[in-house]
Image (cartoon, rainbow, N blue to C red; front, side, top):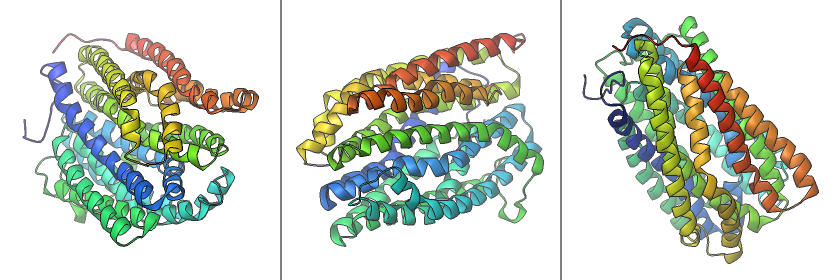
Length: 449
């Protein structure tokens, strides 16, 4: 086995899971430092309006990029499957097609992001004092989004063969670069949200370049030859079949979150800023659990390709437990130190109080979200990409839309908004359990290899 590969079709399941997941957790946390540093620096040195402007754009950014980020999930599944099956020809086609798709995706997002973002900010009732700053941030962000897409697809290829360590080092160096640029642009040059956006775009471009360099230098079937970039139609169709449902899941999430953001916006700048800071911390919790859910995707795909179905159920149970326990411990730890953590974003006590209010309702049960996504990725990894979308649509998106439309309309309070999260996670997790059991029963388990 090559140095930068991890064959998850053999060896101890827990050991391989931890080897894969721990670098992913660290990578995800470092990637979040982009937004966390943005939010903290702008909140401390540019005021509550700038903090609210940067924080309120997250759900809108996700709305535009989630569909194409989902296609990168298809890249991971296909590449891992062909890696497990030792199919060099299809793996090479997947590598080159994925990079082309990443560039096309970035250009599409830039076009529609610049065209529609300002109108959507108005539609979701962004306050007038926040709107110009948020629009400026989004304009710069979307101009550099192609680099983000190249990184997402390139890192998905590396993770497909279990190479999570080098992705970690890329993000570590990019995070340091982002921090330095934020300090220079915001504190020294006083560029407020403009500086934050520029720092993010530059650091993301740096990450994309490094991922491309790694792929070009690969000596195995993951080698990228820029002179031989071709769009294979059969691979593209497979990417779309697997990835678009995953992307639609993210889009549906974003639509429901935009409605929630719109409801939060009705409570004023302090609540928007406090919610933004709490959400920034919350994202760290998601990504701590996400290391185990991403492992499900690669593990199940590699073993499907190798025909080793007997290993899948064992790994899924282990990863679900790991995701749940890590979420339970981290969520309650973050809540315990909530005021200290929120003070990194702002010194305004009203904003901190608003953030604490969200944390008390959402954080204790956030481990259920990790279980929900771990099961969803397991279903996707064994070849059923539509069903996780169905469960998310019913359990999270449709439920949240109806909750905000009906219950929030009757009881107009932040509590009514925030309590919708844990309830939706419980519903979706239950649906995912039923789907996974049903599909595994259909798979004919071969004799152990």
